[in-house]
Length: 304
Image (cartoon, rainbow, N blue to C red; front, side, top):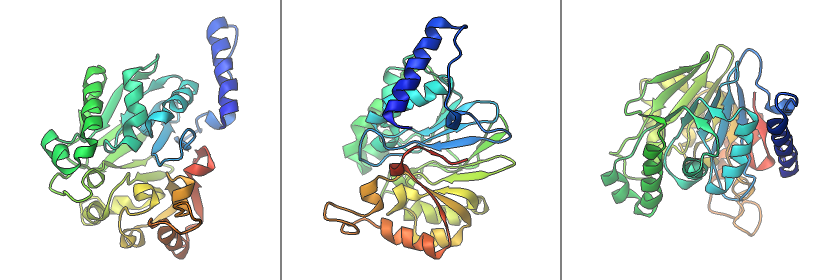
């Protein structure tokens, strides 16, 4: 959905609020929930060229669940999208407190503007850990945790993998949580990894898992549950889990929360001129025969 479309829908929403119940608010067809299973959207990087991570679920009866939310500048777009879905979030899952995952949500916590959030699930990092391993991110982390505690929202700190949250026939299972013994690529390797499934389809969100967390997942008690229909590519599709991780599990399609410059490994001098590994991972997907790709720089994707 482009910005002009959103302005149109916002006007319609305003008209509906002013004249209710005489005016029925129009919701575009690609926003309506699927019948018999959940819908999933990969939210585009609409306001900024930086990388971000933002996904929205709508269950078969219309309950809304959010994964991360992207950078601060995405807050307006995210609010608009959630408004079209009813302005109520059943659960919000946070993978880890890097700015490209919590920035938008942090802004919403500061100014909800009528958005109701019933529950938040995350794996909270301890101050002695984040101050030591990534001090450059501690200010935002402290602010985010403070805003979360002040919000009055029900917050669950998931400290062990294996926890399952059932929402309207859709299961959100936590396959991995923080591991503060890992100090290399520390925040990313403490991502909350989540499997989402119902009787019809499954999605695994690797968040920003690095090599160490990927190996932990492969050798952990839930390794068989990494196989899925849709796989969110780790760390925006590069320098995440190992290539052997992707070779080991089975999946049918890729979700890329990836801006165009990163997709093309373009540091400003053209295709594949940068230091990132996206092209290597893309080539591996070709070798594995994965044909279906949803890429955030290409716009809003309704995946199912």
